[in-house]
Length: 374
Image (cartoon, rainbow, N blue to C red; front, side, top):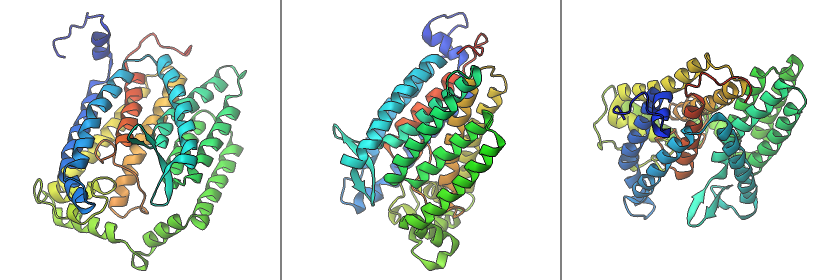
């Protein structure tokens, strides 16, 4: 790529000199480290459930080329085409999310997955980034001319999305989407009275989730009182952090992956801590922080309100997902089944994150002529 001339006007040449190469490099570093950690953490899980040792490894490595290709393909698009693609993905993901309630596969008491040609898909993973872009579009349209009731449309869409997620149920996903949507609405100029009203509604929904969803009640109670229930995975994760110390036991030498049921997904950060130690964990956290903060800093130069609002939503999603996963591993938050971006095993998560960050890269490309007309 370094051989590409600045005067190269091809699609690839123009993309290379306008895309944020530092962010791209950090994302690819997370992808490669994720492949390494899947190789380390997943064989023990596969053996325990009677699968071939490298079952999860082969599947994750099969997803990786498609994920990277998807991210780069989306990053080639203009903001207008990103918006169009996001709308199509939103409609498709919304339909499939609704279908999971009818024909979806039930796993651990939740219907979040659907079978598509031998591939198990979690549509809500794609609904999350697509809705952030659609919401940004609606808010921007409301602010631009006031002719389109963007705020009202966005609130209706949010109610539909939230209802579908709570019916699955997927309270954690609903929480992330709600936080991102509220943040976008606030930036778009949410009236103060609405801020108070939505805050009260949010508190009410949180209390309702605790009261009416037994798994939420159990997780919150165990977080508040660790001695009052089964905290097997959290306890093993904390032991892994203590065992890893500053420099870790060494690649492949960790023991926690042999006993943690979700070592390759929700608790892969504990495997990282045990095998590579505190310094590598801090480096991983620093990479996540760099991607998010660099993205926000580049938005200071953005003159297009839609692009700014959509990028804020996507970057917040990305950072919040990492914070939740790491917080759960460190017993700083109640347990929640949420993957560590680009590092945990999961085809739907990997592809959806690639789509999300592809849009971030597309929005962040240098376009001096892009104004408010989009």
